[in-house]
Length: 387
Ligand SMILES: [Mn+2]
Image (cartoon, rainbow, N blue to C red; front, side, top):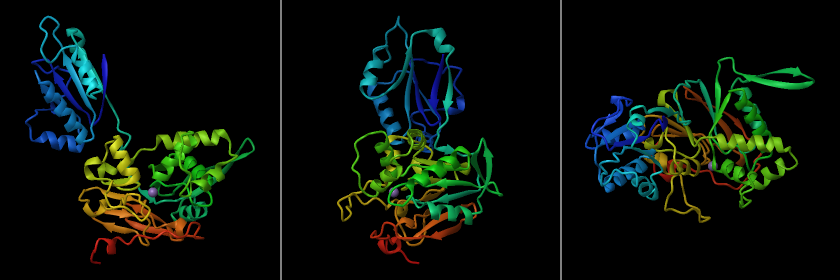
């Protein structure tokens, strides 16, 4: 039988004195090993071997896994003739009741010896994608500015006519690729055309995208879930009204497939909408998704009563460069190896791209303040930083 683990899982092997041969010894660590927490923080596959753990001990491990945002599995070899107090077949139910979903217990000796496992690749880890990459901040339906920016960045399109219809193929002479930082829709004049273009670029393996809070809400709307139609969603709805079901379904599929963030280039650069801590990079969980898409949960409230969620960069100490958007700033803002490149195009600012690895900023001024009245944030002033 073949089991399947996530690349960053913590797996408890129990009920047996000897580690099975199908486990890579390099991936095994002890509960007292000081390296354990480092491994979990980095999201490395980790096997832990405890012969007869107490139930509380297993629950403690489940908590540690949760704190590190990694999946937890319990693999146990059970001896039917010698029922153990803790490791027995009844334990499965008990663990599942406590929220440990991945429990594999067997009393089949042969089956145990012949187990094997495969690893599920984390879709947030794109370590082999070395670029060069062009990160683009919140587009918010600004189609004309987007095409102008792609032009300025050197993207070209060739047109061929197949069966009477025009097919556009995009390419960049330097083989560059695009990374959209979320909030592709809402507020602006042509979210429909922006989505159409990004879907096409993605189809042609020319573009990645991560999910933004506006995209997430638009997805919920398209799926027919109840949403409050405000903050520019009304524009997007009117723009996709009357479009084909196929087009809307393609958007649903695309948005559903978007990860909370991407880690590129051997872990050197991270793309995310609102922000991300170092210990979350390359993993995924409900909590990480919320953090990446909506920002750091905070106590401080904005004027409209919604939580203020933008302080994460101030405390960021990670090695990876983090490129993000979400909070409109007059000028892209570097702090602690992170950069906010949402320069508020839809509010009358500009649409900005960061070229990686060059670290060069390229932007196009907004053609029209489509959605005026939003305050640009000045992090320098807000955090009392020196120039
Ligand atoms: Mn946003």
